[in-house]
Length: 284
Image (cartoon, rainbow, N blue to C red):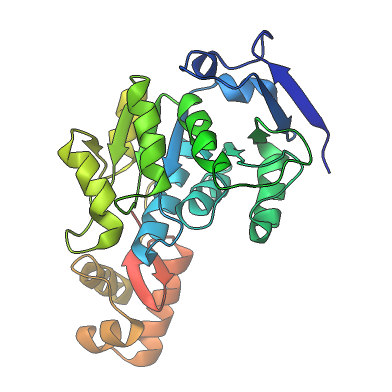
């Protein structure tokens, strides 16, 4: 296990944004190879439902990747679903991400994310207000959410049900006068009930990384897209209308199955599409 560091509110390394919230933690326990200065760098929280949709996973990963590539620290809670995808997206960009735990600093929770936590610690930080040996408990996670919001100038909610814990994070951010943004979702989906409600209350809609980066006076610069073959171009054009399975794509385009499979592989390798639950979608 990497060495545990502890910083108290009286120390210079304690992040000023977190110290400024109504109920800051008395100390933070920290694991990871990054400098403690990471906790004071411009940061954005990306949070959402544990039981998220394939669309939510895809959007989160792409959004976090682009935000990290632009230089923001991506903060989340290491939970299953949206949180985990936020960390993975930031790591995929070679960026920095911070995971905030709702248990002791010596626990990788959930255990299924132990490898993800290890990867985060290699270039970023895992933090907790709880000392080693503190077991996870339901009430600790809402308390953890105030730290996620407190470390960041802005909080993005990707998918959330009406009573999702992600909305607690958004509430903490609003109470502290921080920016809250939400990814619009289908009005018939329960996973979008919380995010759409936030939009109704005045949260900023997120349709891409540029909407978040604008708050930090950063410009989104998309890497030049690699040129594609004619079949790949045709399949990508169809995916912009609606997510489709491989069979639906090949049949709709009227191409040979071998050519279609090769074109889909080309699109995946170029990072132009993502495959989730057997359905292809264009990358955000």
